[in-house]
Length: 145
Image (cartoon, rainbow, N blue to C red; front, top):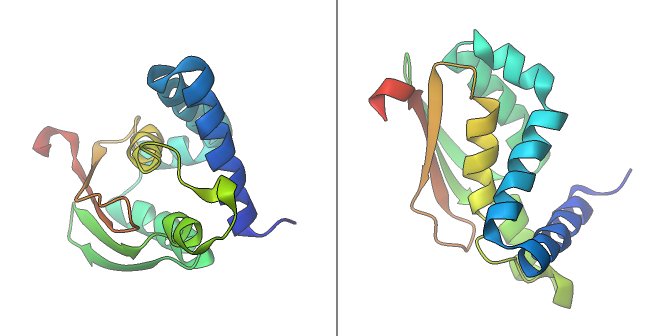
């Protein structure tokens, strides 16, 4: 199995290819399609899931990828303050010329997270993106957005 960092690089090269050949809208469509095609089980789990289910799923993945973050969980709201994104951390420390992040690389998180949440009562706003590995994911009921 390839290391997680290898997948960051592979995704980045794919993202750049879409941008160069088809543009930003096609790249966003690709992200949506990837989420809907690869994560149907998670989308269904979240359809009737709680904020705790979402927190548990995200934390398993963030820990596996060695993200640095803090979590504030309330009854119906989850805020993840990402202090070191694993992908951006990898890109910024890599000597590989192909690991320069694609334009708007970080935008895939919002599209992916909202895709996972699309059948649930929750939505996600990703804010305070600095494109250096820091951002905030705010997951709360859609009507509160």
